[in-house]
Length: 579
Image (cartoon, rainbow, N blue to C red):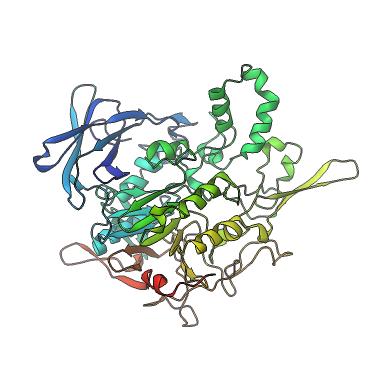
């Protein structure tokens, strides 16, 4: 745990407007007089509102404080008190950065302050911006190196667009704040990490990059922002891996509510449904996001300079592709669970509908026809699940699992399986046609932990730049995904199952064993980051080989970062054609 005489995080920026921005920071004490001072001479101030995170815990699998082995301190999930402070800094002028500093006062009256940083309100149209496109950090080995190289190569960015999967288990507090291995989410994005990476016998410690103290973070819900069924006994990993379809939970509630909620109190009902299905409470409590008329914060749209950014809640639970008898996976239930439907996983079920006619789809359709969207120079849509990819996680199709129950002659269940009709993929069938018609230039996503990109027949770009902390591989040629071998038409073992060819990097592609250029980077040694530059209209990707880190004569870490791909979003304005 952190010392009580320090802040748990540096401040971070959220939800900028034309003349304001929100400053957020976290402590392990409730304290009082949480304040931001800002402006010339730090003479202006803003008082923060304080809330307590409601679901953050540690458990036997946490790497926190003095616990370096499983169960060393914690034997079961234990609440961890963390307070969030948010102040709205107002009276700002677009294009002008001002210094700021946060201070919290502890119960004993001692003041704890951050260093000084700078902030600015939302940029106006025509302002050249550099945006970091990133995702899938998850405390993975190369994440701190990646973010350190962003700052060393680019300098300060103007915003961070994050396509989901911040951490591994969203209710485990230390993964956000202070995992003792040195690579927690906020330390990596604030240059406060201390992660030791060993490559070929050489140990190098990376600190990440000071990014979100200066630039607003726009996040996305990925599958690792969603927590499963709540328990006071099961470890947090088990709870994360145990989300339950909301419709099934509602059926169970109707069967049982007379025993624990006889008055059918709406608040108690909502809490029970969350605890017995899934929730994004910790994510929603950590970040401040634009509300939308449909309710909730998990999909939203903002204008930032010349960009209209549309963020969708497109993710499902990841399940094991195994077909073995003990697998509660994508394609089957465990044999031991066949007589106990409460223990079923219900396949790779979707958390928030986005199919045609759903609330989210209708909201998206309205957004794409709004003046704010239509007038934007750069139209970008961000979500987590890939529409096009060489990675493993694009299979099976993004659709509601179709359950198959096989019974013996006596009527007993002998197998439960799940099918995912490719023609029913909600992203490809319903969402992509909307984006094509709206002339979206860039669809940005993550999930499979690799870099690859695609271009549709109309010129719309698809980019996955999630080879940040690690990779789970690319499946092309002889590399085969683990899929049911009896139905290759529905479950593609190689390539992009949705029919696009990957683009070879334009500047310096890596070479395969055959000395031919590769249309991807999928490496546990080479990390990738991508920058959108609205001043030039280009999207540039860079890689850094962590095996080549070395110390210079001044004991400074040096290494070569190489730009390997670049493409223009402006070309779509000139050459767009209807799909």
